Every structure is written in structure tokens, then in C-alpha cells.
Amino acid sequence: MSFDAAWLDLREPADHAARDAGLLSAFAKGLPDQARIVDLGSGTGSTLRAVSAHRPDARWRLTDNDPALLAEAGRRAPQAEVMQVDLARDLSTALAGEADAITASALIDLVSAEWLDALAEQARGRALYIALSYDGTEVWSPGHPADADIFAAFAVHQAGDKGFGPAMGAQAVPYLKAALEKAGYRVALAPSPWRIGPGPLMASLAEGIAGAATEAGVAGPVAAEWAGARRSCAGCTVGHVDLFARFETHTVQI
Ligand SMILES: C[S@@+](CC[C@H](N)C(=O)[O-])C[C@H]1O[C@@H](n2cnc3c(N)ncnc32)[C@H](O)[C@@H]1O
Image (cartoon, rainbow, N blue to C red; front, side, top):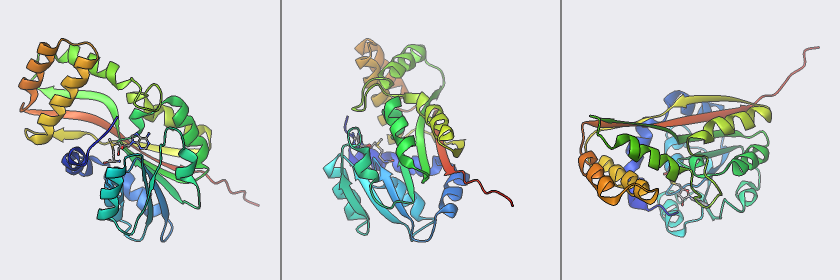
């Protein structure tokens, strides 16, 4: 599965507006000075830009398997280390070294349960800020007769293999939360929905959902008619969830 910089640029303003401000601030405040942060599936560095507004002193390793996106990330943030790595196969290389925190955005709905288990295990006490994971909620207004069929097929497509094995989709965040709590973390979640009006993002999203629904079995003309109607409807809300996890340290009073 590949993503291009134009799509990531189109969604970045909606992503920044959607990120839960409380969790972002709590994560940023908890970082040590000059924290070393590893961003997983960085794309062009959207999470670096979101966190840098609060913590310009942080030092970043941006990891992705797409060399074009990494080159763009390095051009926009020349101070960051960029690392090309297939996270599906080699998470440990991305996390190697003395990192204080791990971040990701719009990534973990693509991955498998096994990968989330590996992340929880390899996090080893470091803070995690995992933003903008899709939660399966779609509300497009006004309603359309094909909505139920399109979103059911989109959910099937979401669960397909995106290079990491069967994708967790909307189940990724609850699954990771449980795995991190088992590993001794305290985990906070907050909704971070996109609220989108008519414009290029809505049009692109409608085309993308219709394309995925077609691949999952919806008849092409039905999906095309739905996308045509949805390119500029009154508004849509696409649900996401942000996660912030802090390792619990236990002190004994004597
Ligand atoms: C939806 S984009 C999100 C990018 C960025 N975090 C953001 O919020 O703009 C998902 C990112 O994961 C990367 N990715 C997908 N599969 C990967 C893999 N197997 N190894 C490393 N990166 C991967 C993509 O190249 C892309 O940059």
C-alpha cells in the first residue's frame, strides 16, 4: 500500500485540527529536555510538526518504507534523522537506541494484532503517542441509500492485508490499549474526528472510500454514483482516536 505526499498534505490540516489537544499537550509536557522520539510510518513528518509546536527541542528519528516520503520529510525537517525501514518486518531496527518516546499517526489501523503485540513489548517503558487511528465511524450528511452497503464494504477492505498481515482497522486502538496496560502502562484515549465540509479533502475521501468499496465487492456503478453524490455533500465526520500511554512506575513508601 502506498501513500503520496499530495494526499498527506491534503489531510494534514484536518489532522492537526482533529488531534486531541489535551493528549498532545500531556505527551509533550511529559517529555524530558531534548527528548529522542522515534516516529513510526512518518510520511513527510506530520507528527513531528504537531509535536514541535509544543516541543521544538525534541530530536527525531523519522521511519518509513517509502523513500520519496522520507526524502520530503528530510527536506522539511533537515535536523531529523530519517530511516528507511519496513516496519512490518523490522520494528526493532526502527526502535533501536536510546529513544525516550514513540509516536505514530494514521498508522496502526493498517497493522495486525501480532504487530501491536510486538510494539507493546518493544516499547519497554517509553511513552507512546499514537494519533489519528481510524475508529470505523462514518457520518455523511444528508443520508444516501447506498451508505450502508458502501460502509460495510469499506470495513471489509479495512481489514485486508496492508503489508502487516490482517489489518486491525477500528479494533487497533482498543487492542493496543489492552496490550499496553498488560505491560504496565497507564493509557488515555480521546476522540480525534475529522469534521469536513465540501472541498478537495471530502472529494478525495469520497473517491477513496468508493474505490475501496468496489474492491470489496460493491458494483462499480453503485460506488461511482455514491462518490458523485458525496464529492460535495453538506458535511462528514470520520472517527479517529488518539492514544497516550505512560509507563507506570511504582514507588514504595517506607
Ligand atoms: C496514512 S500514512 C500516515 C503518514 C504520517 N504519519 C501522517 O500522519 O501524515 C501511513 C504511513 O505509513 C507508511 N507505511 C506503510 N507501510 C509501511 C511499512 N511496512 N513500513 C514502514 N512504513 C510504512 C506509509 O509509507 C505512510 O507514510
